[in-house]
Length: 282
Image (cartoon, rainbow, N blue to C red):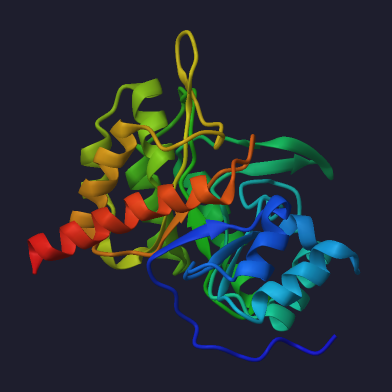
């Protein structure tokens, strides 16, 4: 397939996750959305309808790639076949960013169905740094890593999460996709201050923000990406925008996907916060 024509590698405003439920609406109506995020693991096949629709969407909108398959925290060798496919898709579709998670998803070549946590140790910083550097060399660009949502902590951790992330950023040269919902969920589950967390993140390394919904369980918050953004996360987002500026933001909704109108309503809330904070600092 012929590559999509190169476009300016930048995004702004509030984007939406591209979901198959909305393909027809997006192509027919071409709604005023500044960019779409692609769950790239769903497009790793050699053909089929997903790639057909993605190619059409890319004719009208900038995109980013977001994945779960790099398994950057694993002790398995990097999956070179996966990264080769990812690079081919990058060259074909010209995403603005490629991102994945501070997590591991495979062991002994067996893939799990979850993003699994790491202890916050110097050894883990070095492991992630080496694997991120190798990945960036293979892909030919700087990637973004996303902070986790967590439900437990390791007794052998040697630092807090912000210090852990700072170490990875400094050593690998990668940038950060800061998920505001993940911060709030982890803070509530583990008893740290979400606002202090944001204040500890280096401003210049945050290239994208994520917003999503969580579910209140009996004794903890569960990061579902299956509902509207809750008010405490909106409040934390205001703080993030005040600190980092109008960083491109994504409304992430992965389960019980709603109408496109509902997603646009969430995006409009984020845009209003961006604008109000810009006016306040301007």
